[in-house]
Image (cartoon, rainbow, N blue to C red):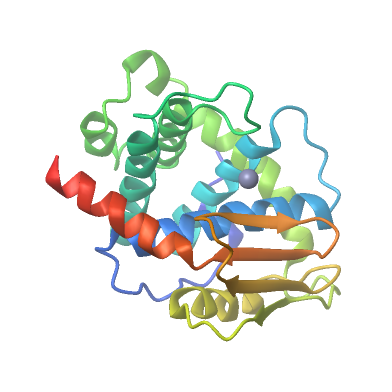
Length: 231
Ligand SMILES: [Zn+2]
C-alpha cells in the first residue's frame, strides 16, 4: 500500500489547531485546490468530481500535518458534514449528500492508518461493513492522486504557482499558499482570492483559473462551531 508519506511533502507547521473554523477553512481550501488540479492537470474523472476533490482534501490533511493535528482537522471536517447533514439533502446537487461526504471523509482518513485510527473510526461511528474496505479505498485515492501530484513537484519543470490576491487577511490561507508553493508547481498561475462574496462559499473558477475563498465562511463556520458546542 502506498502511504501518503511517499509524497515527500514537508510538514506544514500546524497553526493553533484546536479550532473548528480553521480546520474547515483548510479542508475547504484543499477541496478547491482539488478542482484546480483536476482542471490544470487535465485529470480524467470518472464519477463525481466533487468526490475526487474531497478525497484530495483528506489526502493532503493526512500527508501535510503531524498525526495529531491531522486527526483534529479530520474530526472537524467530518463534523461539519454531519452538522450540514441535519438539513434536507439536495440530491440534485453536484456534491454528494452531506451524510455520505461525512462517511467518505471518516473512511478515507481512517483508511490511511487503520491501526492508529481505530478509535477515530469508532468515535465517529464508521460501520464495520464500510470500515473493512477503507484501507483499499485510501490506497486507490492515494495512488490516483499521487500520479498527478508527482507531476507537479518542485522539479517538474512547471513554473506556475498560487498567487494570493486580496487585501483581506486570512492568515491561515496565506500561510498555506507559501507552504504549498514550496511543494507544488502548476502549468499556469492560480490566483487565490480572499474576498467578501455575500455568501459563505468557496469555488474554483475555470475561466479565471482562480480559487475564491469567501470571507463569509469564517462567521458561518464560527456559527456552526457554536451550534456543535451547544449540542
Ligand atoms: Zn467542489
